[in-house]
Length: 358
Image (cartoon, rainbow, N blue to C red; front, side, top):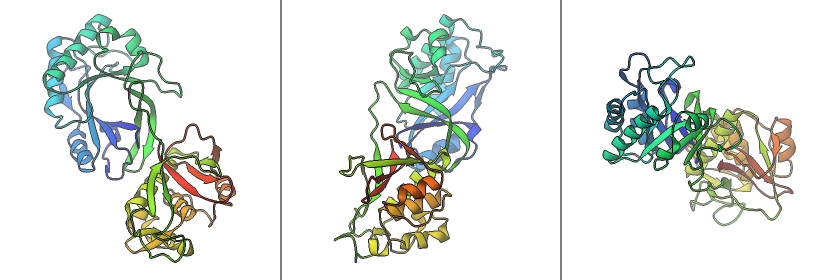
């Protein structure tokens, strides 16, 4: 998934191998708004080690309460000392320390705060890392001088369906604090590349065909292509899209689809289409755990992924799939804003697949 999560102690212990997102920005520390002391995020070390072990792309951030240039540079050194190899910048998080705005840096002037942020970023670049600034849209507009920050990576928060209108250029848009996915028990922030960032592609997971046809196939993914991930495409019969109203269900559907594609034990055969469903039951319908050679077809794969997400459905084909999904609480959606976990089926009997990246 191309969306980016950011985490800190508030997400507690994370099972990074279950997290379906490819990229994470991890808080490494903060300066106390009352004491002025630099404190480690208690989960930072484990998050960095385990996220890297799970193959995630990594960035880091530090919550600043610096009131002088020297303090800002000290914060930057603290973050860089713990960075290791990074794929994303070292961000300085500039915002109020509490709702009463009583933190030591909360009442700095706009110019004084900008001087500290620039000092942080300058020191990060001296340490051979890319530097970035995180703040809300309003904070960038009223509490920082963006004209002095435009050379850094800009990460702006605006919790809305509407993209930020300020600053004029930014790389990341933090659009919600209500993220949910397997591996993380608490809600988390989600950001997406925006502005100058590469436009996101929609990817789908599907069971397409067996090694030689659609029936009478050898169990298991014989050629590595029977289950696959590919770019979204316009089907000649046209698509209908369906989405479950619960974000966690959608996330688990997408995760199960990825697990299925990665398991070489799962192949395609319409004549043995339910053997995956049967074999996966003992593993809570996790297709990644299936250890015998089995088969599925396009719609039975979607059924297994829904069962893993806690939505058990009666058997269906691509013609009956819309009615079954709607009865189970899925909503029909347009195709202009597909998201991970959305289910697609053709308008007439033909094919079905799962959106895994949007």
